[in-house]
Image (cartoon, rainbow, N blue to C red; front, side, top):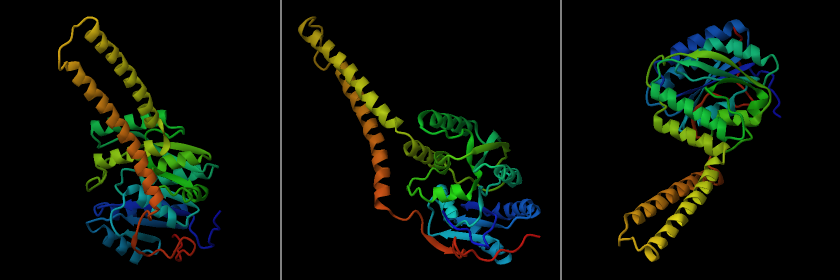
Length: 327
């Protein structure tokens, strides 16, 4: 268990950013307007995940004016979940909020999340009641993913939630003990346990800029979540292998019957090609599933660092820079 530094803030707000120059100023204003009345010692930790716009320069300007603004600049783009992990590694707060910079998750919900945490919970996550400004396809795929994950994993991962939540220092310390390379933080938090609850909210439309979460990245995140917390795909590959073997055995019996008993067969029988293609397809799917798990094992065995920091103004998690008192 970590020892809290006497100058550590009460609350750390982790904000991963990737090409968010249109939203940073507004986000800072809204966050400050929400947290200042709470009379807390707080810090903002912006993690620049390889942005190609002016995001880093804007954050650095904020840091020059406000010592509560901290930043981490990655050497390249490492991904949203890794950016959140870096923020957790360097956050000094007794409680930590994770929020995206696109303003789809309202900063105005933070006081209610913090109050709920003070009631004895270790995790309070924000559950989406509605999702504005998103296509029907994205809403449908997200809904199917969350419910599929809830059904095939051995832990209870809440549906219709993202990473927007508040967690206690106890949960942060537990997350630091989970070094896997393919991060799925909301699943890890559910796996940790402790008392958890939620607050519902309406998710707004993106304030500005374009989302960095493409369908390709969402599929990768879904694979990380499924392979990190469920062996159901491996079991499905095994069961599918037995089923296909049974069907192939029946086809073999029918082929022998047609050849030696009924004599109703023709050379180059079409069903032979169908059987070969079907068996080959199932085998390739099974090999692909196994390969996904092996790739993740290989990444963990190599033990490369999760991220490389190019620049930061954070003194360190145990020696935080002085914080300006709110007000």
